[in-house]
Length: 147
Image 1 (cartoon, rainbow, N blue to C red):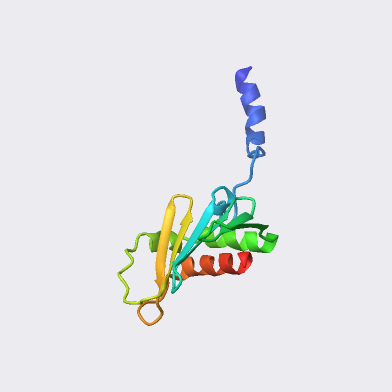
Image 2: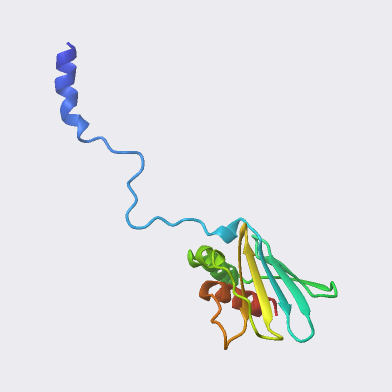
């Protein structure tokens, strides 16, 4: 009897299908900024400023100057999407591993970008060094978006 059942079911075994199809193409991974704060500290210059911009995962932000005055705002959907793309860039991790050399610029701005537990930084001293590309893109976005 068991042999008869096996004979009947064997041709049907090829018709079985998996519950989920195999993925085709690259699999997207969530961007780090979707669940962590992004903080930018800009310091230095002739007047010795210290501005801190913190963007929360939902795109809301706070910008605080050296006197402690704070302004709040919200990134647009396009800005938040771009921030998520930029913070997922693997170059940021590589840039964070680089030691920033001392600079001879007198009144340069220092930028320190922290995304979750990853921190990268640079000194804006064009004749001496080119800023790390991915970090500079995030800095530019945050500076423009928070005015």
